[in-house]
Length: 80
Image (cartoon, rainbow, N blue to C red):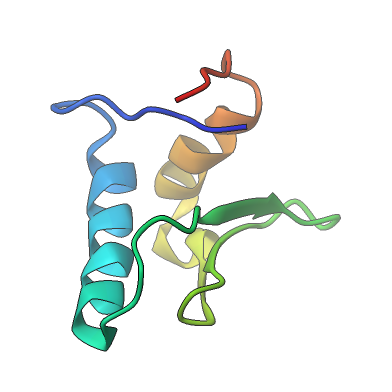
């Protein structure tokens, strides 16, 4: 599934995605590969970019920021 993050909303989510996208641009990689959001069996949440191989442990940014991403698992999904 895909999520559309509207401008002006979800500040931490948008800034995290911008950072990963910036890394792709610097490496000259295609921007079309989606990022993968994973909730692990221990409850932690990570965001992975298979294009660069980078994985961000979102719990490292505190529970509120991890929860911002975790809520995407329960929100209504929208196709692009």
